[in-house]
Length: 256
Image 1 (spheres, rainbow, N blue to C red):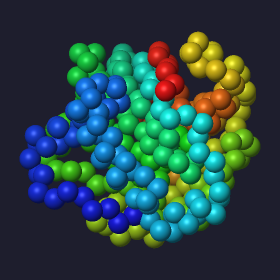
Image 2 (tube, rainbow, N blue to C red):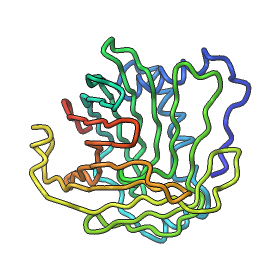
Image 3 (cartoon, helix red, strand yellow):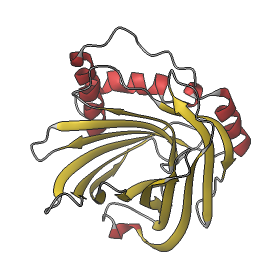
Image 4 (cartoon, helix red, strand yellow):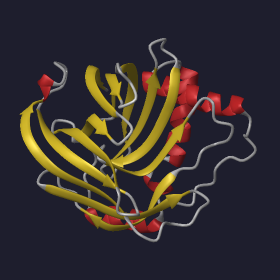
């Protein structure tokens, strides 16, 4: 993907500014902060930011763009783990933007019960399923974290039902690719009215049960997604790994 990241921003204040800007963008907050975040995302999380091999794979797939400009949603998240007797509660503000070519630019700002942003995640994904680019930012970070990037697509199932597989070589900015591929594998389940997730969501929802497998062949995460056919995008309802389980309820959903 060959991104040129800004150098010399090692101060923690700069990282905090990044996180706050993206959180504001996800929440549709101040115009100045939102504009800055939008500019950064457009430049670095777009089709043109992708590795040329990945661009070619997407072009060959001839994918239609998603039928919305922007969706904002908020989820109430319950996080449980074997070490905790009681689940923790968080809120996630999410912005989904049409990035063309079937791609969705996503910003997630996770907030604690005091409404303080504790983590921000940026992605460029295929219809919300799997990410070609992803970056996690903590307000406490002392340097700009790397971006995990897909560098070569070995298999790309662009369907939305049945068995779906995305197999790819990947690495982080500034580091070589892992020799063995990662995999994102999904199988579709039941179909139901999307209004069951939130009354503001139109159309049908299709359950997708997905597994994330790393370059060592180890299953790292299990995900339950809902593919929203009206908007041609998937949202995450459950994420599970060996450390924690996150169950998300959509409490607000707006289409722009």
